[in-house]
Image 1 (cartoon, helix red, strand yellow):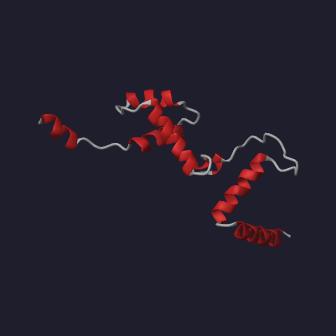
Image 2 (cartoon, helix red, strand yellow; image 1 turned 180 degrees about the vertical axis):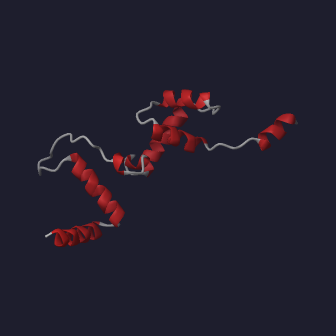
Image 3 (tube, helix red, strand yellow; image 1 turned 30 degrees about the vertical axis):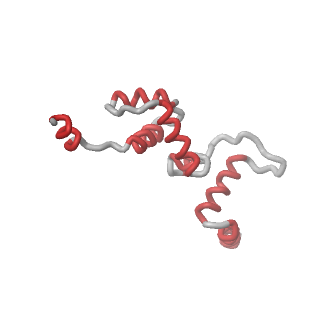
Length: 119
């Protein structure tokens, strides 16, 4: 009976949000490292659960680039140029522009307007 009273008075913690929050502040952490860190905070999760949460978040957010929710999500390192001479970073920035604009047409229109302004 006492355990029931304690469980209702305890603050409920969203494990998924805790995992994503930890991963956001500790980029590159492995699932086992996240498990250990959350265990020290009193959350009981396993590595498979952490891995699933991270995978689903990346899948839902088009490749995981939104996990930081800012411009640092775009890779800063240029790996190389493709056949057209465009870097991977430039492609990711273009992808973000299209996603934020809503469509390729809207992104092109915005770029054309920008071109008119700076010309």
